[in-house]
Image (cartoon, rainbow, N blue to C red; front, side, top):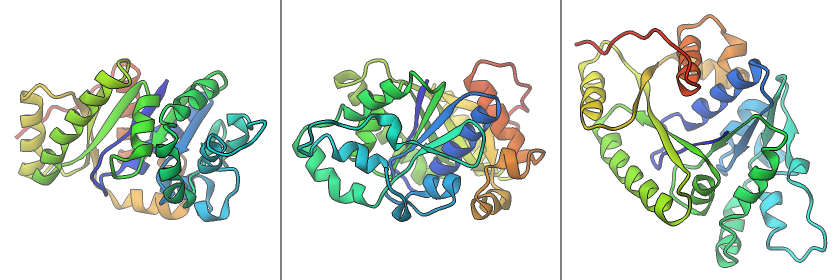
Length: 265
């Protein structure tokens, strides 16, 4: 399964959600790949422990060969790096993505990522794609390449307005480029259960018929500690409540039964 985690708004937890779901997948014995399409390289640094600027054989190198004059292109798996965690692999980002974007757009290479990930799907059980906070060439490529889309939602009114725009953009892309893409759900992130506004916003989105997932990820300093230690929560703090929430989210996405607390006043 190829999943993209996408939101045009920054600071909503795309990289944290991508990496922690992927880490749970890998811990369950599935060969799992994270593709980092954000030039900032947060997922790359989180899982590989090195800044993207220090790495070779990146997703930028994979895409650059599609516009270069080369006789033989390297295989997609040659741009995959093993992480320190069993079964978890990364196709790292690169600052060069910013400079490469115009070339790729000019050469109409919007489907090349999908071709590469379909090939990689033969050797990986799950692929998670992290994206930049923008609707650009790379995020469109990711949405075209993916089968499922998760949308992180930061519980405030600005995020709500942005959410409607995101869903409209995805709908247009589904019609024109990827009719198989499914919005798997909206993930309420950094949720504060004791505050009334987050609960009100989530309840209203549900009443509107939007696909809000039943698991809400709490705000916790433990996530920042996880980033600093370069360890996903399942490895750094397996018994922490936020880790259990991520595990519940993973189970929901895979159709497993989960006992969840109701959204109360």
